[in-house]
Amino acid sequence: MIHCAEYVKPDGRRLWLYGRRPPSPLGPVPSPFSTAVSVDTHLRFHPLLREWVIYASHRQERTFLPPASSDPLAPTKDPANPTELPVGDYEVAVFENRFPSLVPEAGPAPAVEGAETAAAVGACEVVVFAQDAGQSLGELPADRISLVLEVWAERTRALARAGMAYVLPFENRGTEMGVTLLHPHGQIYAYAFVPQVQAHAAAALREHYERTGSDLVADLARGERDRRIRVVAAEGEVVAFAPPFGRFPYETWIAPTRSVPDLAGLTAQETADMAVALSQVLRRLDGLWGRPMPYLMTVNQAPSDGVPHPEWTVRIEICPIRRAPEKLKFLAGTELGAGVFANDITPEQAAADLRGVRL
Image (cartoon, rainbow, N blue to C red):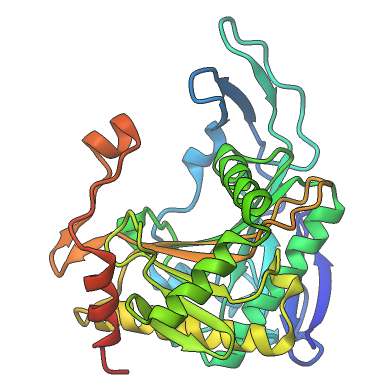
């Protein structure tokens, strides 16, 4: 069970504090700014790719790699120099992004000659995994990682109730991934539409379900568990594996072996098992070459678009971008030009390398 306390910051943004026991901030909830940023954002439709592009010029002003003494995600120490968070007894914090790409009450989109535009309706939230800036998600105790999974589930439910069609929790880890704040944190983007990547996935999953009567991702998890060729970690009924079609070096998926559409649908034991598997994968990635692994991690849940999705099983995808100790995987010619990925490391070798890391 998790407890949540909700607050409104002085600039109007909302803050949620989570813990295994009722959170209690010590002193007022701070905000480093007395007024909200003037948000300038809208969508334009890409007619060839048939997907929306977000334009948010105010994000050019967002905080960029501040010194540790000015960490905006650390609890406030000096009331005269407040951060985003209070000092207090809580474990995970969520707050509305000060520099959002999408907003719940978006203004009308500007008319742009030659382009179809739309209001940038949605939500952007920041999820702070720990008060200690020196920890990474993978280094946290399994119970804390389990709490993060439950917080993602709770925020997904809340945003779905608010009318969002798709909710995507994710973590960009490392400056190589473009991270602008080093404190361990992730983000949640909620869209008023189902993005094209998820729409294509839903169509493929639905075709498999209609043809076979089963769920493709759960089938993959069971098959990889039984073959044990590409398994990276297994805990209870949750399997972490290098997908046989992985596009990134050391790409790893984590999924339950039964069909369940989202994090909220997992049992308490499955959530605990997923936390252990996630911890193992992240620590193995860091241990591969004895240095932090930069990655994109996404939590892929069923759309909340009002349509049943029996074809969908929740999965966590981790896409590392380091292919060797001193080499990064850049998306360039064939990846960006044609959408066809070229991978230097086979999934079979990747899984064997990660299994070989001593924890």
